[in-house]
Length: 395
Ligand SMILES: Nc1ncnc2c1ncn2[C@@H]1O[C@H](COP(=O)(O)OP(=O)(O)OP(=O)(O)O)[C@@H](O)[C@H]1O
Ligand SMILES: [Mg+2]
Image (cartoon, rainbow, N blue to C red; front, top):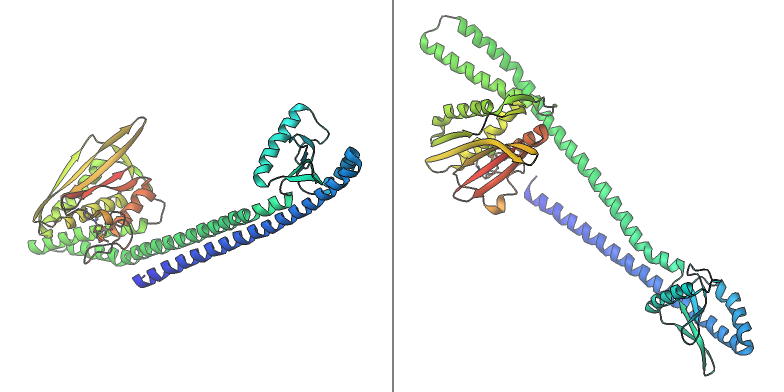
C-alpha cells in the first residue's frame, strides 16, 4: 500500500476516535444534567414535605409527627432519616435498616449513614416558627442512583462491543493474509515443480551420454543447481502445512548452511570469514528445510551488512539453563553496519528493507518459521551502528 493511503487511513482512524470521544462526553454531560434536575426536584418535594411535617408537629406534638412520617415520608422513594435537634436519629426509611429496631448498635449504624448523607446534601431543618424541631437527612432515590450509573454501563458495553468487533476484524484480516501468503508459496512450489522434475530427467539423460570432461563438469554443476532449486521448492511447499519436526543434530544443520555459504563466498566479492562456534551437540526437533531457510536469511543479512572489504560472521550455539527450563540458542553475529535504534522495531515488518533490491521479507519469514513452526523466538539481541549486530534464535 502506498504511503499516502496509509496516512489517510491513520487520519481516518484518529477522526473516528475523536468523534467517539465527543459522543461519550456529550452523553455523560447530558445524563449528569438530567440527574441534577431530578435531584433538585426531589429536594424541592422533600422540602415541601418537611414544611408540612413541621406544621403538623406544631399542632399535635409527637402523635402528629408520627402520623405525618407514616403518611408522607414513608411514601417517598428516598432514603431518609429524621433526627432530633441534637442529631440523634428518631426515624428512618429506605436505608436498608429495619425502622422498628432502635437498639444502640442500630442507632450507631444509622448515625454513620447520616455522615455519608451529609456529604451529598445538607440536612433540611424541621422548624416551627422560631423553634427548631429536628433535621431530615436524605439521599438520592434508587432511580437517580441507577441513572447516574447508566452512562458508565453504556460506555462499558460500547467498549466491549468495539473490542469484540476489532478482534474479530483483525482475526479475519490475519487469516486472509495468511491465506494469500500460503497460497502463493504453495502455488509457486507447484508451478516450479513440474519443469524442475523434467529438467532432472534431462540431466540424467545427459549424464548417460559420452561427454568430454569439460561438458561433464558443467552438467554436474547444473545438477547441483537443480538440487538447490529442488530444496527451494520443498521449502515453499511446506509453508502453511503443519511442519513435521524431526530430532536432528543442530550442528549438522548449521554445518550444511555454512558450507553452502563458504562455497559461494567468492561470488560475494568480499572477504568474509564465517566462524562456527558451538557448545555441545544438542539434538533439536526441527523442520530441516525450513530451518535452513532461516539460517540462510540471517547469514545473508549479515553478509549484506558488511560494507567493508573484510568482515566476520560468527555463529554461536549452545544451551541456556534457567532453573528447570533449558533452551537452545543460536546467535548470528556480524561486524557490519548495525541497525539504528529507531529502526529496531521495523526490521521484522514485512516490506521493510533498506536495500536497493531487498523485498524486506527475509526476517519476517524467518520469524514466522521460528515462532509459528518451531514454537521458538527470533529476536534482535544486540546491535550497534558501525559495530555489528547479533540476531538470536531461541528454541
Ligand atoms: N545483520 C543485519 N545488520 C544490519 N541490518 C540488518 C541486519 N539484518 C537485517 N537488517 C535490516 O533489516 C532490514 C530487513 O531485513 P530483511 O531480511 O527482512 O529484508 P531485506 O534483507 O532487506 O530483504 P530480503 O531479505 O527480502 O531480500 C534490512 O533491509 C536491513 O536494513
Ligand atoms: Mg534479508
